[in-house]
Picture: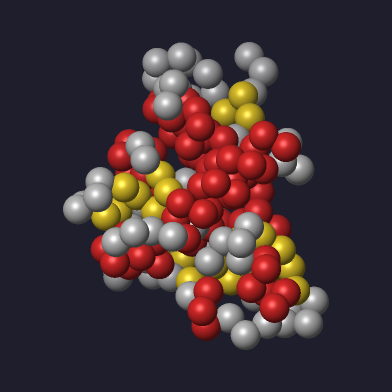
Length: 196
């Protein structure tokens, strides 16, 4: 999946807005895929998420410490998805959004700590470094190519959802959750409307 010229420009602008957060509180929120209560901005996957409702659909909850579902137990241990419960796990958190799970599988790296020039350049948007055997999607590093590819696709969906949220937050949420907008009744899969 490739970004159109317009979406690529928007993606770059969103990364810049997140990467140069003006407040320390936003820097911390961006690193943790968190919401900055002071500035009323959410951050996920290196992107600024202005819609509080969209951010809420992305944020994770603590993974259950005493899960009874065998699928969930295995998924928690493997940072994977429980096919039975339709929830995913990464970094000790549970996600209901496939987009959020893919983006949450990365590890935050401060740009000033990146020594490799190829990785530093990739962190401005995204890219895979063959030398380091790692991919960057914004400030998040993925050591597994499969997870990196999923994060790139998830990032593109979140960029589109961010844009859609200005017109319809329900559609934006449906885009990142493979759900249906309660207002427009449009269903989405992989960020795209599905045919009725």
